[in-house]
Length: 126
Image (cartoon, rainbow, N blue to C red; front, side, top):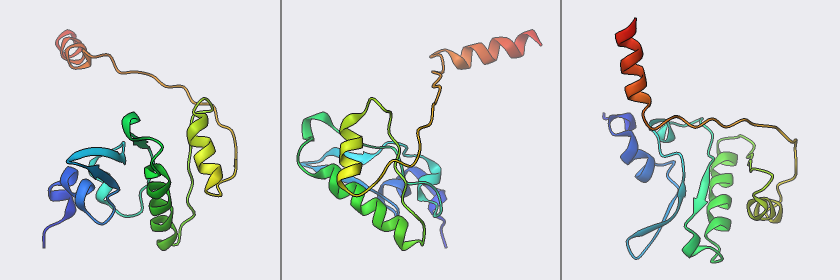
């Protein structure tokens, strides 16, 4: 029997844990972190986003409800997170019954575009 991890990206888009909306052949709503572990049960369902051209059509509401239902079906408690500045997402989550649990401060670092070149030159120096 083939494992979903044989083709993890495809499994994440089409498998039992997929959350993807399409209109006229174009992705309009999807989980942002399409990654190998998306197809594996018992991982967080998070980082969803909507194409700005398709906002205001209820796609986010339907996706968040579907994701939350899947989490509950596994016997787990749904949890959403958003940057404090993302007031649209916070309003959506609150309208669906989510309540503030805690405020957390994150520091985000960007990986330089030439990180592979930096690693190669560091290896050459050692």
